[in-house]
Length: 113
Image (cartoon, rainbow, N blue to C red):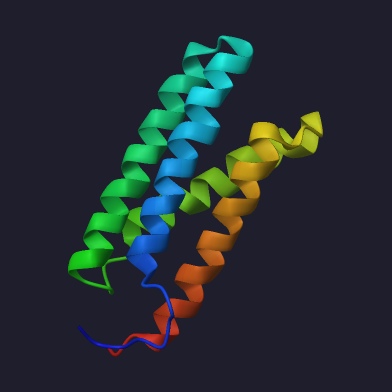
């Protein structure tokens, strides 16, 4: 395994992020508000983030599914947080998604092409 300079590989952080999206955005949203669309969206985006992390574990240059998922969630949940002002779950997911977009962006420059 090649050392990319990161203490924790990006795909491992991605798996944690996928779990956060599925639980924080989906399951907790369903439990708190009884919202089936929140549950479905959380599980869908959590699954996509997990798929992106699996792709990253195979090839660190294969960032597109993960980047599209975290970028989309940054926009959607950022707008929900802006309009509602509620940190849970919109602010948490928006913040985590923004951090993941930044982490992927930085890691793109550290991977040999």
